[in-house]
Image 1: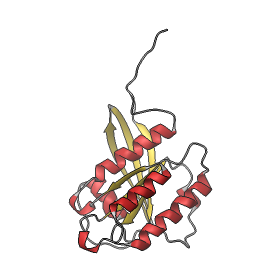
Image 2: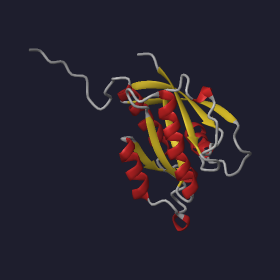
Image 3: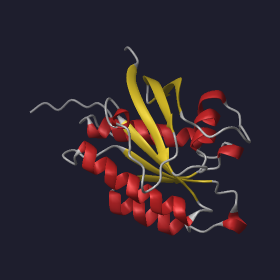
Length: 184
């Protein structure tokens, strides 16, 4: 079976760790500091339940509530990872704005495949957004929610597994069920 091509965009406020999550996933290492991202694209193959996926991961520039989101963020993107930092209330508010923009641009007929990610969960003493609040927001959107720590590679691969599963469900494939044949 050939690899399925999937394009995933990481979006969220600046300095929440979108690039750190991406680089940890693609290259298995943590980048401590670097220049703010303009936009980068990474490639990685991932195997989920026997199916290979060729992922193109778009690490976007940071958004804020006043951002004009480029059309390229909506065309030919299969799923979205919306990232906030657990130590930034502002970044949590911005992901709500980005989600609303996605719904406006993509429509809501089949829902938009999204995973909500609270990054930097290692910064417990600086936490401004409780786990439960992130979970409540994700539940209200009916999307998967994870807290990650790119620095420690905590739940990073799971983020991309979850977005692939969300894309498959949105396309009418149910990866949660085994293939079955019913005769009547």
